[in-house]
Image 1 (cartoon, protein in one colour):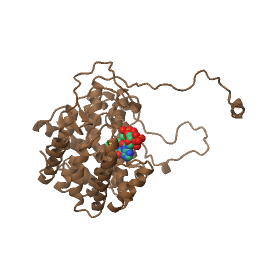
Image 2 (cartoon, helix red, strand yellow):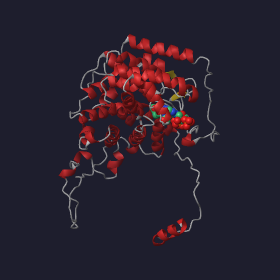
Image 3 (cartoon, helix red, strand yellow):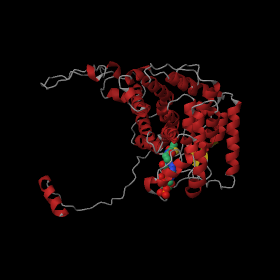
Image 4 (cartoon, helix red, strand yellow):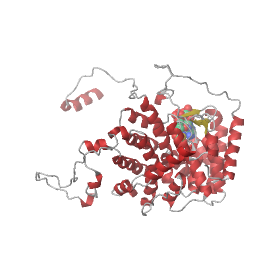
Length: 474
Ligand code: ACO
């Protein structure tokens, strides 16, 4: 099932062994058998500690640095599994049989080509947009395929829309009150075919989840191609998920080892508890919006530099340090200025992030033969040593998943602006799994904010405000 690359498997098993030895003395997490709502918990700012739902999708033990999906340890999944199998596991809650995996893979193959969505996307200035903005737009454009609900409401199919190229749209400079808008859709009010999927139900269901898991790599890869002034590349049905993604993005079929490392990177990023982007997806789904909108919210949340955007920032940071010999001075200056080091620290992990434990040796393995990445890797390890010896001891700050992923991606030929989209291409599997799970017992999210403002203020009409402000300030 797994692509055979024994040297890579060895690296993962070694990292697993070291992690298990180092954390053997830390007690295992206490199991909470079932939540009896309403539940008592201590909540900090940013909802830290708040319990929002039960889940069987994944578990993070921050104290021991453990991560598992549906009960399977991340080290085992990286050593023996594939992204297709892992995304099936997250969606269905169990590992597939050979037949189930074949069927699932066939669905991914069918959903991977998105000529219609890409045609729509290419009507936008993709090369001027941040790839995460373009990816978010792309998922929204994918939505039209399954959302019969919109068609039912009498909205036109984008197939029949006149090209939305701004320059080609005649506009009235001085409106003359014309009866009809000049720019309009040629609406033909379709009627629902008898076997059409059910409106938003389908766009909120498993079918849409698989469509998104299969489609996001196609969109992300096309974004890179368009930015690079090339046409998108069609997926190759003979290639697996990770290999197809690399092929569609770079135009070159990856080697077996590159494919395996990309596959591992996708497994590592697939799910991670109630992080900001997962929560954002779930909040949108809880309103009974649909999965496309939910994933769009996840992509938006992931793009921030405190979340998925950190991997791009790490590479910039390592490049700006200028070499391992400058690390000490750079670190002291950064600490004096009380600046954060990108790729370090985590809300949940108070020890090594297990994903960093896997990505570090993979980065080392690839950087060996990559002249541009080798000094960056040496800079990174030097910085890691300093941070662990100081901030690690004082504040439990260790490398997180983003610290080494950028070096791995660089060696795979992925440019830095695509690092966060790569994260999204993987995390869509966790987002969709958790959204589906939550919808089974849905309750709209509605936390509270404590009002600390004034009450009973007297309303002053606008003309009297400047005077009043002047009076109160003198
Ligand atoms: N470098 C230096 N100091 C740090 C760092 C860091 N990367 N992270 C936290 N600290 C310090 C803070 O300055 C703070 O110190 P203080 O108590 O003296 O004021 C203390 O540690 C706690 O920091 P918070 O920001 O409150 O910790 P929180 O749990 O809220 O933040 C976060 C976690 C956002 C990941 C943070 O560590 C950070 O900003 N890291 C850098 C960005 C990054 O790598 N993000 C990716 C995270 S992984 C992911 O999302 C996929």
